[in-house]
Image 1 (cartoon, rainbow, N blue to C red):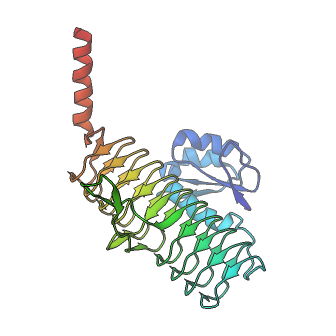
Image 2 (cartoon, rainbow, N blue to C red; image 1 turned 180 degrees about the vertical axis):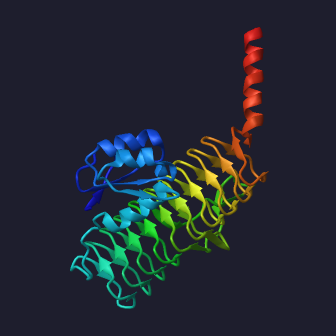
Image 3 (cartoon, rainbow, N blue to C red; image 1 turned 180 degrees about the horizontal axis):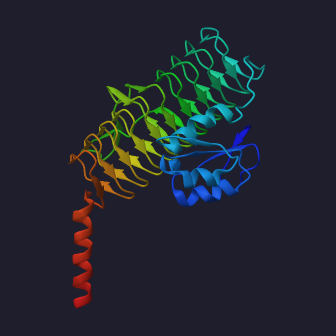
Length: 313
């Protein structure tokens, strides 16, 4: 096997996966070299249909396929070194086999761990610490003092550690004066941050993104937010300042959350859901929806009641 593919596009050298009996027959009829399947085809009837095509049985076929893909999928050919167009401050420390692309900038006293790749036009600010085996894609900007763990992936155009949106209004003049934004941004191991997302530094404290969090494109996270481990945040979500998102929370696309809200462990908040400032959502495994967000069953009952009222009119 030399690659991976969907069933529809598979060639003779590809690995595919299926998660149900219906898709299995299509996979067996495809040119694919082998199929990762669930435990359902253990019966002799299913095995017989396989013919000479190997079936690789896994409890979670999608997960097994993802892991196999890392071994089979071609990785970019990146060579360690610093091109002449890159700018690296004399006090910066680069680990073994660090790879810098054209026009990358590494600031004063920045530290980059071994095996990390910095893409074209990326700017790594003064005092930034980046761990080992990270991927920083083109035109990423990391403001001074931010800290990234190991195996972090930052996609193109993301801005990390910018000032938060904090102002104090002078009642006498009506003007807004900037509140100090002198805190830090800390990002744990194995975090992935999507293209053009923005995460602000803390105002006086720390904005923290926990280990294994996955953040989609075009997400904004305000200052002082605390994002727990293995949190998943879909595109166009916006978080105000000082929000706590506990571990294993899932936020759908275009979610909006007000300042000082708290989303407790394991909550799932559906797309375009809204949480008002200072509110708490709790219930491990409970799905919420709507604005203001409430449990899905309650939300659907309210929609049905509204529909009945509309019919009466």
